[in-house]
Image 1 (cartoon, rainbow, N blue to C red):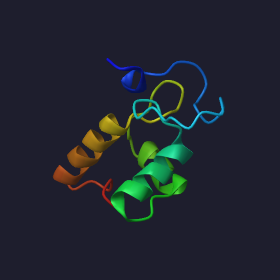
Image 2 (cartoon, one colour):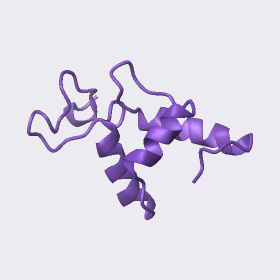
Image 3 (cartoon, rainbow, N blue to C red):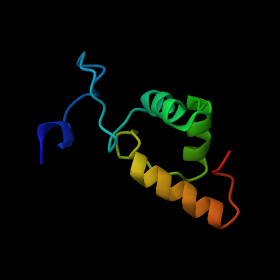
Amino acid sequence: MTPEHAPSSGPSPTAQGMSRLNPAAMPVADAARVLTRLGGKPVTEAMLRADIDAGAPTNANGTINLVHYAAWLVKEMSVGGAGGD
């Protein structure tokens, strides 16, 4: 595994002044920015927090694993849940 793909440890990269983000442990604000850029539609922190309140998975420290979050969204959409919009 190359260093840029290895999981990070310690405080969030933005707190360390680094520009790298770890998709397996992303702060909600960073996740909203990344999802907005990648998806082409606005994703806000409030939208992510609503999904978290509705059962979206988070890490123990409150960060989001984007792969787990995406899987949760797919599951919610397949059962007619509210995770899609």
